[in-house]
Length: 192
Image (spheres, rainbow, N blue to C red):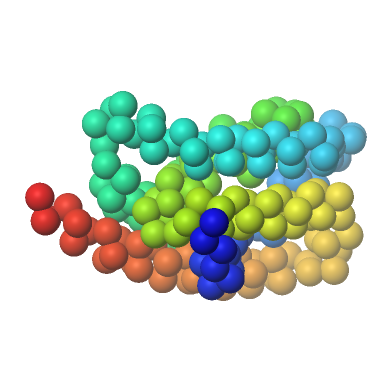
């Protein structure tokens, strides 16, 4: 076991920025208004299960497809770059389907454990120990659960302006992370 507080903190912040649960509060509130009750516990547990499973089998799937982790990390850094640009510029580059109900499918996947989260998990696996990433996933899921339980209250306290500021700040952080991930993995592609 190689527990490292710096890695845990970094992985937690990266996943927090990618999951962007704070930026999803308006969507969560509108889903709650449409369908009534949101199953916060079930959505959180399923999302955690998906992310932890992908952490351990994602690399095997990549090897089966003939892709190395460093190549995936470079590709993942580009996806993170686009997600960050969406957050900072307030534009939609990646088009997702609008969820139709507040069941596990739109919340656990793809809202919480979506393409960005999966890409990020396998990408940071190239740099961080698995146990530190698992702790980061659990910390994020705990926060996600708290946000799901108190989304309406948070929206009222932060307001539209507060949510926009949070989204842009985490967008800039995510942009810096994507550049670091790209630069630290691109060198391995040219050493073959």
